[in-house]
Length: 313
Image (cartoon, rainbow, N blue to C red; front, side, top):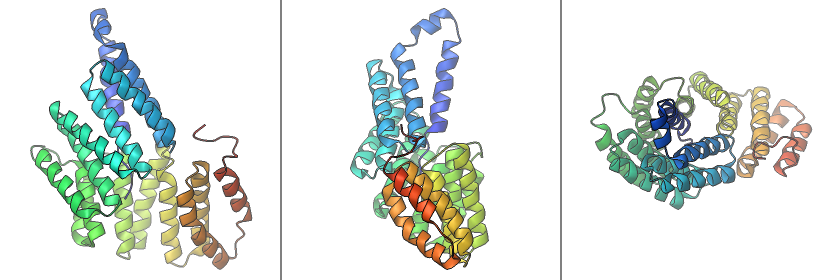
């Protein structure tokens, strides 16, 4: 459906590095400079990834991988490969994404890091769900369940992906049960995962004709994505809210959300998403009797890269 978690893991790992640096000089001197440099590249890459700047994110993640490989820092290498997989998933290069997720999973298992292994397999399953390879996704989720069996607390991303898979299969009651459980096991400060679960629940509510609940969940996803400056997720949330309003006959409200989404898509130059949204925006604006000429002007201009402040510059 959408999204993958990187920021929380990166911040946690960076905190570990900082705590090591805060110790005695002997500890400070044993920390490989390449590992510190690799972590800095991960931070930069994640910032670009959040903004939807995928070529730049990929460049930083590869630099991070090279730094961690040079210092034989296996945990950093695994994290870098997982994040590289995320970028390839975002740009619809499925084969590359699956390759990097699997390698990250193997590395995490070698480190006996179950959380990392679960995250990589969860991302791999999500990538397969994206393209409706549901049987393959089932296989990856089954692998994940074996690892998660020993956990005291349910692993939120696994529950979320199981719920999304059932949603795609049309098993709405079981999907809702899993997604509700995923939401209960997701901390609100874990913004990427909180947004993902709410977006999935919003989609479920929209499909089962519960528009008020759908809007509530989409708005929760929007708030989380705005707080984390997730440029890729924010317009998806806006477009989803607009679609629910439009389905209820509220064309004027829908136009407002569609316009906001289209402008962000244009700024990050996501032409496929603009193309998918534009006909609906035109149709809704005609029904509402609203002029969208100025929106069209900015969308065309920004899609060509003619903006004073471009997120990926």
